[in-house]
Length: 276
Image 1 (cartoon, rainbow, N blue to C red):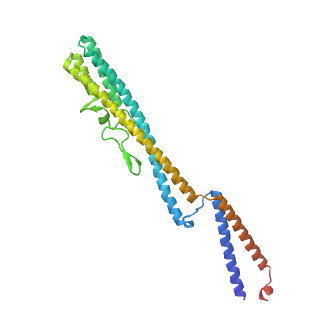
Image 2: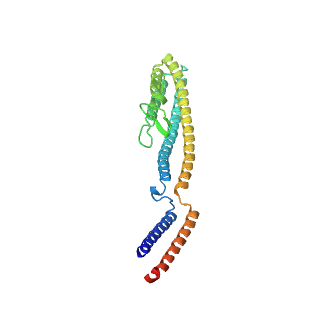
Image 3: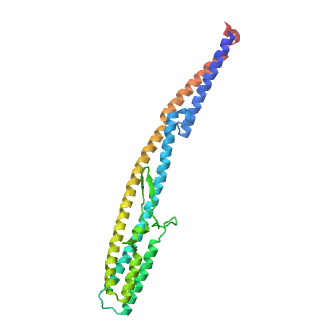
């Protein structure tokens, strides 16, 4: 009989310990706002949270890549706009020299300005981005990842942006300067055509940048929308439902208090009472 009573008391103490542990866990869930305190609380939910966390980390990297690429596209567009303005001035000068009425001094002045424009365009082609890297890569255009399945070069290479028909824009301008200084009418006519082609080429390159910018914007919007979705899913899995948790806490507290009161009442009995 005494052993039976002792076993019953041991079981009751263990039950109350579990009730206290559950109560404490609920209190922690309420205070931290996190429903899962350890993986064993809900292994399936914990694995899903880990998967979502990995996806969120990737999306953060992709969003960072998008912002960086958008800045590069904007900078490159400004560079090509300046290049286009310089080419327009070069076209104006070349057309003036093509009328055949200028003397050697005037042709020399135009040739010197064209050479200066060529130097400026070389400087444009060598522009660096905010990271100190060439804005227009000297080799193949730099490809960047912007989503799990989306990678492309937001800014074209220098060879694509500043080369037409195998000749760089600056080389064409220097050839034009040489022809004008020498009064070479054939060379001047070729320079007029070449500069016109260069202007069209740069306009096409600006349009390509515009397409890149639009594509980056759409990808960024899609990532933002998906980010909200996975964040909401993670919140629904991970965070504590305060209303439910508080109700559960009250019930657990009531159950534990009742068990402790009953246990205390039983323990006030004498051994003689228990044996009767």
